[in-house]
Length: 159
Image (tube, rainbow, N blue to C red; front, side):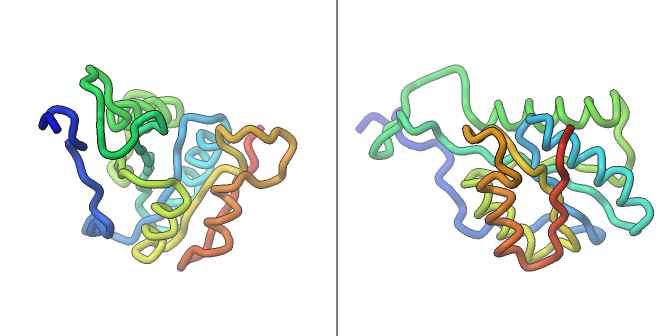
């Protein structure tokens, strides 16, 4: 198999948490619900003396099979970085507070947030992201995180 078609970034099954002060992790996916979650966390964090890390999770699309990755000028990691940056700009404007950071990570959103919860004081998620079932009170990611996280979870209902 040509080297250019192999996965350029094999997953790290257990990435090390970022060192730093106690933080709440906010799952962001660019949806109105995740923007509302980050907005809520930004208001809450200073009162709890916590830093905020916005996390966007990415993975290769389902059309990529058997470890073969087409040569593209685009990567899902680039999209995740763009999403987390735009979400931060929507909430904070062009200048973010010193207690705020962004991060991207490869994986499935619920699994990544649950894993991150072992090193967080709190997880904040929107009630619904980009899933297809409008009208549900909780999306699949927020429900899984609320059920399995290792720290408190705050689910924010976007408007």
